[in-house]
Figure 1 (cartoon, rainbow, N blue to C red):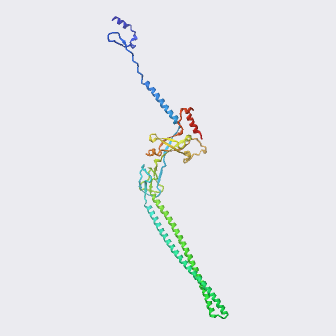
Figure 2 (tube, helix red, strand yellow):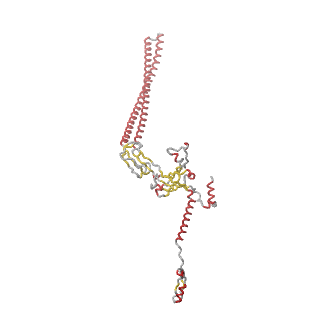
Figure 3 (cartoon, rainbow, N blue to C red):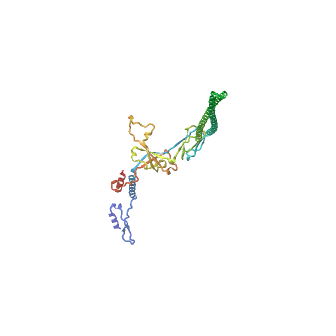
Length: 425
């Protein structure tokens, strides 16, 4: 015990603060053996940091590669909106609205009834036009009968002319005979071979035949005049018939106009679309030009993207466009550039700027680019005119292979050959 006390006293003062090696008994009361020290565990934080760094490098590398291959060829603008060729449906004839068949925001197909205007007056106008045509048809038929009757009169007058000509020919023959008889009687009377009575008879016959010939000539002239008058009257009747037929044509035009006005009382949809901004009310009296409603063709919507003039150099029709629709949580729809406006938007404004006044400030102009959208994306009608979108045009020529880092550094022979081929005219 005394020895143990001395050992304890000889221990340094800081020995209690230092870790002592743990001893283990051998089970037989012998000396104690030291236990081996356990290895410390690695901290989880030391593993998370390298993982985050590797993930960041991978994400950054992916984004950098995507920008190198595609991103640097995208030309974007958020000054882009959905448009459509909206039609304003208006009345073309006056009348009271008898029926409003289309409700607000309802879908209609081409030919569907939209608005019905009271057509009573227009039906009466059509009936009156038809009655006038029927009356004119009767007039034309009457004139036609008169023409036929006049032709019979002309035939009769022609017969009278022929008879008068025959009488005239007979009178001339009698006159020649009487003249010869008078000459013979006169010669016989001069030689005392003929009687005075025979001479007087021949003289009377000559005078009678002369008078008969004169009457026959007058009759022939009267018959010819009657024939000419009958023919002139026939010409008058023919002209009246032509006039009546042309009047019938005018009445048929009036009937077509009345039927056309009647058709305008039934207003139908000119194309498939959705009804909006409906102003027509039942019983309302409308005049020609009164706005009734608007018809929006959602299935033929498009995008007008206003790009800066500094972005237009690489934009051409036929290029693909990524259209991100704001109302669809940024859903991207693939469109196609169809055309580029011929002038900037300022040139089409109500008061175009005139830089020649001296008050000049250079402002980057914008030009509208028309983008067509696929039919399947427009089918459900979620893309409506006026909505905002973000348009990104892919200006890279997709017929060429994608750019590579070696190609950018000039070591990719295939890429260089493709660029040379594209550069050739």
